[in-house]
Image 1: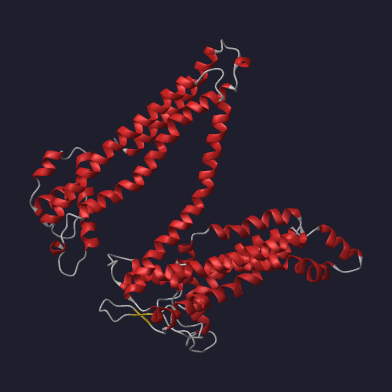
Image 2: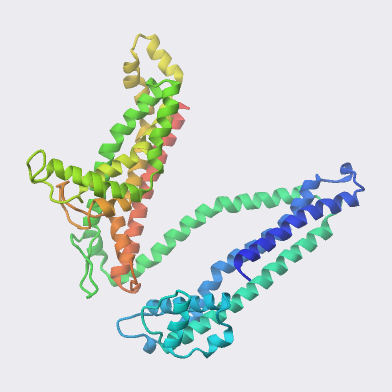
Length: 489
């Protein structure tokens, strides 16, 4: 049974239980709502939650655990001597999953049955069968891969069947037990409110658990990386030169320099424009102008970063060449290509303008009106009031907004990929190409990488370093904002 059908059946049982539970308790009470401990809606909700929550919870855990169990079981079937030279277990398992997915599609669509799958022996038969279904295999299917794919398919089928039986049994059991408990004196409201509280706590914990999971996943792989590569070269080296010959130089410093340099230029563009826009919208613009201009400014925040990257590559880069190139308007030869630190920094700054302006606007508006009135009452002009009263009062919050914008700039990828180039080096020239940490993470994890080599594992060390850097900026920004709120609330 497809997963979507299983979920729909559980939801249908819950919906049916909701209405049946209400009808049953009203019938037992003789139609008198006053004879019930709780409102009828709570009895129905109790039945629906009993039918849906345990079943869907087990289904979620099953979906998380089953792939890992099958992966470990099938990978144990592939002996080290079966792995071709120049390959590794991860690449072999990728072939196994690809073949197994193709065979699963063939069985689901009715093109094959399990007996025909078991009869497949030759690579040509597998390639021809999957080719008819649009599953292209780039190389011959080796016997051990085909055998592992069959085992993978059988294990997945068995797991899916068991999953369906367990989930439906839990849903029906919860439905029946809750219907038995549905009586006029049953404290349905208390049970439902406790269940909803538990769901709210689980939702609140999800973000924390996700963050912990991300950190742990990067931390373990980072430990593996430092077991294969010197931490001194990573943190204190000056060259980024990855290769798969075993003599890579993987220093984060050139990447960190490019990241901070591009982010600095982006902030030079975004902070003045965004702050001036926030001051105008909050202090000078009328209600009609504000209602028109603020949404238009914030439209920039909704543009995908890949579009900004194309804008950098096709518009801003050539425009800068026309200004600073050898044949440009200034007649100098400072810039030879469209990709540069300046290109990426300018476009990234444009992207950050609504981020800075929106946060700064909210912070400036939070300054008490009494402070403005007091300044104006003492004879100060509006511009003097803004410079000497409003901005100093809002300054901690504005600094926090700038730090949040900086963390956003440091984590940007697509604009840098398309606008800054891919050269890791130390340079103060903003017209040269450079690269950043995020760009190198994408590069090192693109394609069929060997996750036992330092050249691939370095991506996790880079990611963990970037996470710590942005987390520190966010914590500092939140600290400053909270201090501001305590002072001016």
